[in-house]
Image 1: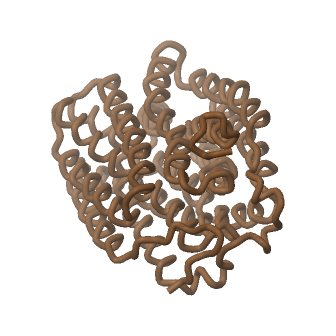
Image 2: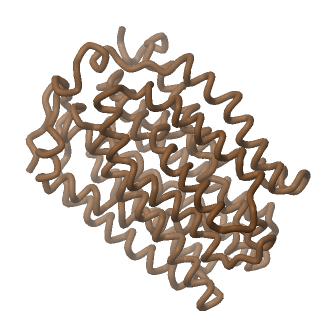
Length: 404
């Protein structure tokens, strides 16, 4: 059946993957909302509380290549379902958080480890096994699930905290995720015919050893690392930063939602653009947009300026997130895609650990985030230039492009 047909079974799989991404993203998307109330209740500094996010990111970074290898060998479905279940249970367990920072770090470490198995590392391989000509759009729709989470969940979390307290809010979020997200994934997530009928070693594409000797691979790693420093720092600290400047918690949550909405729009648009134009050039434009947003956010003191900055950051953040798995599949094929994307996620996780810590340390030392956010914006601009060094990929998946 033609991929363009709305009855093509791959589109149901895209929807299931998007739902899985939505619920697996919740602990990432709402950490900034919970940061201030938890830090104030236990008298923790912003930097020490941000360490939980760093623990999550580091565990995700370490586990990503390992879990990716399991996905390449055993299939995504066997990994996604238990991983998503663990994430949901861990989120609910935060309702019983104690005053020990080790407790918070441990739970978020478990979330980081498990979330990789229910992330784009797994879902992108499933999507690419169903799509070729419309690969960019299918990928964008799947990744949009996480961004829809970023739009709707922060305001919900703010209201839950206001009405019931942060403990009950964590429990409700985890329970709903377990009761809604997991059953949908179990019912609808299936891998494509090519994955089902071919063993991993027979799938078209480069081996891991061939890919890691390629300049293309390491350029993608460097690009996503540099860009993720700014994205993670802004995502975790923008709510606290804006409330420090006098905005209400509801207004700060609205800015986070605007960032998520812009990221959703950017991801959908990126998928459409990648199916028509050279993906590296698309990414460079988006990353430049994100850097400009960070520069504006560094000095934003009004809701209007903060919303504009959030929109620019959100649009740009989809650049490295959408483009890298797409380019990995085009440059190296499907044979080792999840493993290679796992290494990609290792770079993202490391950056997501470092970025919030840099922002938190800057605030604790100077009382402001502005200088550090400006520096991270410059790094993002450099990644845009690095992306321009990549060639336009061939649109063939029956054989991988030779690494260079």
